[in-house]
Length: 402
Image (cartoon, rainbow, N blue to C red; front, top):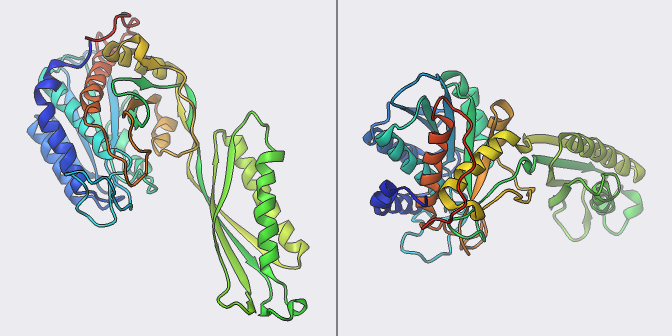
């Protein structure tokens, strides 16, 4: 099948839209220009409903099919926010905002869903309703949760929800997906070690928090290495250590921060418990005190098996059977689409971004050639899931696209 003809006809304007977003990145929930531009484009395309300000700065659009005999609805989600990174691409469309850039491809994600909105509103060749979700604050702000708390699925009920993310290193025109846990939980930790400060020449008169910190940093690695099944996954990374102000003063306290990533909720709970034991126990062994602040941020992203296969079949109809993998390796990077998947069955698929720099890298850029493939995938998925009352589609034929 390859890409839809209508996408090819409008590809130049979609690329221009993407590059405009790239030049003008905005962070987290502070998306006044991005949200307004997306909403205006959706209204111009003839969407039946466009609502701004959902979850702070999210946008929701509704496109109804020619018929609604099934009463079914499908949700499609794209993220809109950028990252606090200084761009180093040197591209003509590079960021104009100092210290901000679209280093994760959310400009491309937004554009692909906008392109799909254009095609769906134009054709309406489906039975039911497509709910298009443009989400803020994926990069650490839990924008998915904010939209849900603002009534996303209560105001626009859907039976299934899907997302798409670009994947550097995967050829453009290819897709990859897998059922089950695909991205890790994201937890933040803060550790306070309280000792007794004093002169560095008289350590015996102090309770030095520095050796406590050294022992703790080493010990926490044993939690993953020696208390968790090697077939499971867990990462505990201490990323900052702050304490002391002078070369000849033993500090009173030291603060550490870091992150924990897992692919199973029981492993996540185990790590939290063991970390608390290590912090208090090791500090006590040195005569100091320790406190752990453990904040659960994003849950594990879990693709539902049935919806994963349905997404893969739609991708095969666009790209060809040999260009859709079903064994995508899991990553311990986080994704707040996990909140939506915990409430509604669905799946996230990855689309090839070619030989680009990695995500969150200053030299990263979204590959505009992926736009047509992503738009076509979204439209094919809606046609299949909302065609004939949402009947299960057959497997795509095995010829490659032209």
